Image (tube, rainbow, N blue to C red; front, side, top):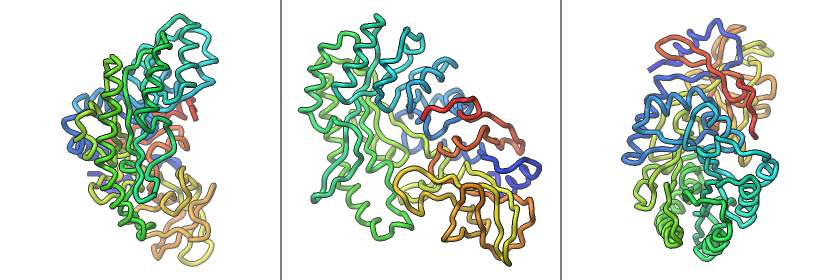
Length: 391
């Protein structure tokens, strides 16, 4: 496996900052995901990758593990389909986009759109009726749970129980231009919440308890909601569940036909905070040392690639452990410069390796990924580098 020292040697003549991806480490993460997901295949969560080259490599070279894409925007799905990628599910609902469509796109045959409300069904059906076509849809069911009065989950889908889903299924009967192709039930409270977070030590035992308590409810609910859809005569092409943090659990659900994951491939910082598995840090970024303000304190250019979500120290990038560098508690990673405290004698122009907190968001900051493969560098554009910005 490529060492951090080897990465720094390989990029010694490159312009900084840069985003890097090590293929040896990526392959180790792929093998880990296969073990966690087998015998089910994984639909790739594109928001965690945001590089078309990497997505294509995964689908073409690891077809025994990966199948299909879970995209995050209709325009992204169209763009990926225009490049020959197939079986794309848009993981989130949209409204205005459908009203703005003026002609049928051939790419729609490969795309399934997410819904959970009557308004979603209505706007998509109106577009399909206007354009004289049929559209594939997927129901996003809510798998949040409640324990001792604590709401454990996320605020996304309105499909919280069988009665609400039945209402949508009845309404769907009126939507002659829609085809229910699948169901997605993502247990975000299990897949997306670390239970060994050093920044939340007091909460870790509570989160573990809630996760364990939530698992049986999640499986029971997903099975019931899937059966309800089938009872209305819908032949589902897929039932999707899971995320990197819950593959080993979700595959035990007999209603699930495929899983979804993406973050485990790059393995950002947030995926260090799970007790049940470990991934290799396959991606990160490098900053250039440009200043020394006082003894043992240097400054690097760039670094403010803070992750989305709730605010906290766990959302900040950090130097690789072997860099023996600490961030300044008052400044952290700055928008254009980052102070570094270290006992090492850093050289001006030297590269410092960092890890980011959330997987694909790093690619929104860089036009290309510098990919390390067989001790050589190859450069491939990110979504941003292909002039694509979807959200």
